[in-house]
Image (cartoon, helix red, strand yellow):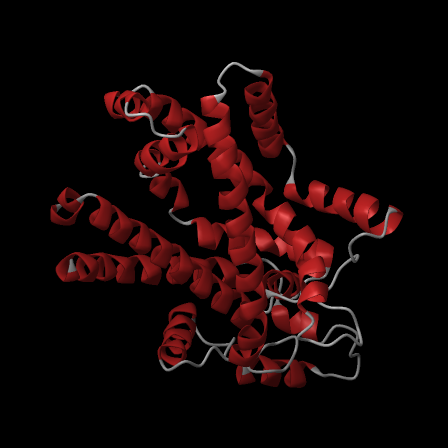
Length: 319
C-alpha cells in the first residue's frame, strides 16, 4: 500500500506543475492590465510612476522569468502580496480557506446523508409514487442552477418568512461560539452547494441498489429472516457503495470551486468570494494561489479515491 500511495503522489506532481503553468500563462495573456486597474482614477501619476509600479511587482520581466520567480517563491510558502488588498496572500488565504472548507464539508455531509438514503428508498420502492417523486427530484436538482436556488432561498426563507439570515457567517454582536447562530447562517449556502450532489447520489444509489438487490446474497439474507432495514442498509448498501467512490473523486475541489458563486450570493467570507473580487481586479497573486490550492485539493481527492479503491479491492494496488 505504501508504494501504491507513493506512485500516485509521484504522478500528481507533474500534473500540478502543468496546471499552474497553464493558468499562469492564461492569466498573464489576458487583455486587461492589473497596474492600469490599480492606478485607475489617480490622475497625478506620471508614466514613470506607473513604470516603477510595474517594476516593483515584476510585471516588466519576460513571461518565463515571471513564472520562475513565482514558482520559486511558492516553493518556500510565499504567495506574494495582493495587488488589490496590499496584504500578503498567505494571510488572506489562512483567513478565508477554513470558512470555505467548513461550507464545502457541510455541503458534502448533506449531499451524502440525503442523497444516499433517497437512492436506497427509490430502489426498494421501485415503481411506486415515492420512487417517481425521488426521480423527479433528481432531475430537478440537475436542472436548477445553484445560484438561482440560493436567491430563491433568500427571498422566501430569509426575506419573506425570516427563518434564516440573509447572508454572512454570523450575526453582528453574537458570540462567535454560538453554534445555533453559525448553523443558521450555514444551512442556506450549504443546501445550495449540495443540491447537485444530492440529485447525483440519489440517482447513482438507485441504479446500484437495483443491481445489488437482484443478487443471490440478498435473497439469502431475506431467506434467513433478517429484518428488511438490515438487508437494505447493511448488506446491500455496503456492496452498492463501492461504485460511489468514483463519483466522490474530485468532489471536494468541485465544492470549493463551486462556492465562488454561492459565497457571493450569501456574502460568505470564504475563498470563493475572495477569488471573485480578485479575478475582477486581475489580482494575479490571489488568483494563482487559489488555482494552486484548488488543484492540490482536486489531486488529493483523487489520491484518496484511489487509496479507498485499493483498500476495497487489493487488485487495484498492482495496476
